Image (cartoon, rainbow, N blue to C red):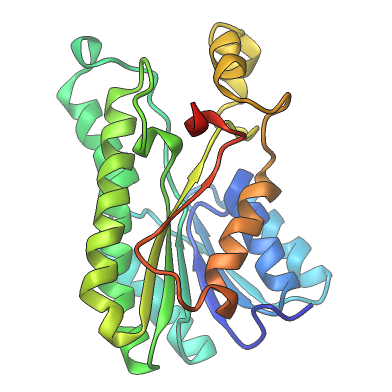
Amino acid sequence: MSRLNGKVAIITGAAMGMGASEAKLFVKEGAKVIATDVQMEALNEVVQEIVANGGEAIAMKHDVVSEEEWEAVIAEAVNTYGKVDVLVNNAGISSPKTMENMEMDEWNRIMDINLNGSVLGMKYVVPEMQKVGGGSIINISSIGGIVGMAGTSPYTAAKGALRVLSKSAAVEYGKDRIRVNSLHPGIIVTPMIQPTLEQGGALPYYKAYTQLPYFGKPDDIAYGALFLASDESRFMTGSELVIDGGWTAL
């Protein structure tokens, strides 16, 4: 298993859900991973599992809205492994709010984590990728970045902006062999969405729009990220990889 052999990857939001699956799969496929999150207990468990299975990974506490912490993460990757080949901007939060019942502080927090955190990641990783002659940036957006979804205005606004930002970055940095793509999950059963599923109010809505008779798992997204991180997608940039069980086929 060596689809990422020799590559160094930074994965944010790696303590659980899609990020944890991405970290484990990337290492399994030969990468060295810097796994970051603010939830250190869960993140350490992920990295300990990776190391126990013979992989190489580092856990770092990382608030993605902090420029100083982004600089520290990039420096740790370069000092330890010599380079950065892949960045997965996975960290994010959900927002079951409409515009009329939301405070602007909450809007700004959602924008900071779901959009600005990825902006900072690209800002600080691009110079390192330029030094080594290229790389792959994978921005985890959402189907909410493509189509409207009820009750999640700030979330979809951030994810839509991230989608278009990925295209602009792809155009800006294509000459440097830096590929930038967005990945758009549908309903994936993760700790972030589990409360919504358990409450049941949104369940009929999710089922009605998901054309397959089941929801996705974190590994479904991890395998998509693996493809975008690998050289198999070497001619793919500025694109949207949609893994949504048919939601956007309607």
